[in-house]
Image (tube, rainbow, N blue to C red; front, top):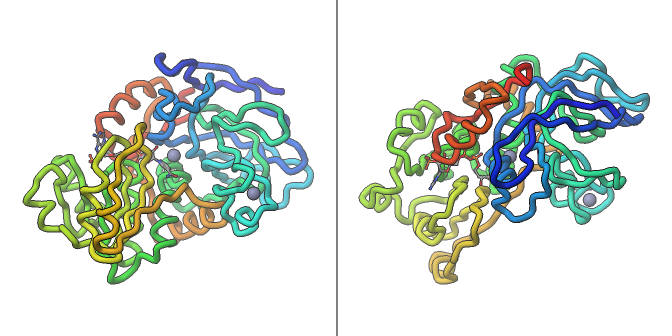
Amino acid sequence: MPEVKSYAALSDSTPLVPYAINRRTPKPTDVQIEILYCGVCHSDLHFARNDWGMTVFPVVPGHEIVGRVTAVGSDVKKFKVGDLAGIGCLVDSCRTCDNCRDGLEQYCAEGGVFTYGGNERDGSGPTYGGYSKSIVTHEDFVLHISDKLSLAAVAPLLCAGITTYSPLRHWKVGPGTRVGVLGLGGLGHMAVKFAVAMGAEVTMLSHSPSKQADAERLGAHRFVLTSDENQTASVAGYFDFILDTVSAEHDYAFYLGLLRTNGTMVCVGVPPNPAVLPAMNLIFGRKSFAGSLIGGIPETQEMLDFCAEKGIVSDVEVIRMDYINEAYERMLKGDVRYRFVIDMATL
Ligand code: NAP
Ligand code: ZN
Ligand code: ZN
């Protein structure tokens, strides 16, 4: 089992440090990828700090992976050496349950295997993510990447992209839909780009006044500062659909008040602590409060193809691997424009 350079969190209160892991030699159905870029998702930070109380250390985060195929197993059909390839949040699932058969591997009845912090289905050990030089994954969970777009700017599509694309599609956002995107970070900026590309009327709901110009540049038709009562009053009862990408505690009930009758608010952000949600805020106006987890493999490929066709990528700040701990501190302050991406050549 070859040793591979990586970066890991060894505990919830220590910085990430260089760490060596072992990757398996490719099996007949495996693809081996040299990782060129890996995006930095807020989930990586939640995991490294054990915000959700489920982390097993050491953890090698990273699930926005793009790179080049360096080896394929004898039975691999979809990839050859030299191809560009991507891996998102999932590396395996049962393939036989209803959800897997419907291409919803993220909701696999046996639990999808996450790219890091998961356990290989064959019992061979934990999964390690993309803050690493290479990765070996079954070809069914490897995505094709277009060579038309900047590779660093494509990496965040593998999580931030699909996590926002999937609910916008599922709830049929399009022309005539009044969409509010809550939180302008990695997920939020992709949500704005997608909702605009799908033809919706898009309002950015942000607690950062300094992000107004960027929101407009990204295509938002309107900017509402969530700390300004006059501004939020102007969109009370207004939205058909709110996509909530906020990573920190906030008042869900308040934002439900911005939905019109029959409106839906979908949470993709996962604050560390549970929140209170009064039934009254849903009952008056027949409102829906829902969640959505990343996206399945077929829809992830659909999203990547949609981005290649429309020229949609993430706005990125490319960083060195050893900047990761500062990047986490900046992410905690909402100071990301709009996704850190690690250049793996610096590891
Ligand atoms: P991010 O880049 O750090 O963006 C989060 C945004 O939340 C910030 O930019 C900020 O936007 C907003 N925010 C509002 N109140 C805040 C506060 N008190 N402190 C800091 N920020 C605040 O994070 P991300 O990578 O987009 O991820 C967002 C959340 O989605 C995380 O909880 C992550 O774990 C989760 N996630 C879920 C899925 C899923 O499948 N459901 C997938 C990926 C990530 P403004 O400055 O505009 O207010
Ligand atoms: Zn993520
Ligand atoms: Zn399954």
